[in-house]
Figure 1 (cartoon, one colour):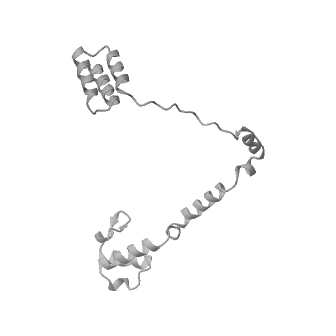
Figure 2 (cartoon, rainbow, N blue to C red):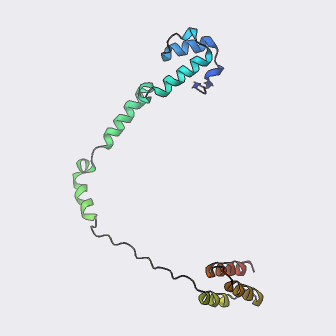
Figure 3 (cartoon, rainbow, N blue to C red):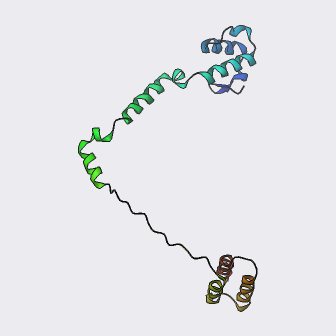
Amino acid sequence: MNLKIGRRKCRLYKKDELVAIATKAGVPDAGKKTKEQLCTKMANIMNNTPLAKLYPQKAKAKAKAKSNNNIPLAKLYPGAANRVAAMRTPNVKTKVVAVKKPMTKNIAAKRIDAMKMLTKYNKARLKHMLTTNIAPSKVVTLGREIARLK
């Protein structure tokens, strides 16, 4: 097992040290077991024990913090509740997003012609690509990249 006790792994302890730790942890007949058996028993105990039992102070602090979070803000600040209610708008309008039209070959050809940084050869190659099965939007994107590299 890869159980860590303190800063060392369980298997790196001497047997007499492990027996003392195991008896504290509640392993029965700790003196008669091997190091491996002690490590596995302690690992099982640690895995099955709730963290609240292992660390009672932290569990109490966590429970206290959680109980403070359950108080509604309206009870803590009665005047603020009315202001928050007034600020809420019941009819929230959603933002209307324009639907883009799919790019056609004609629109792509016009955009390629409008690119000033492209040479005539590159424009001709891109227009030839429009006749193949490549998407017009991808051809225009490729044209922009070529123009940017010039």
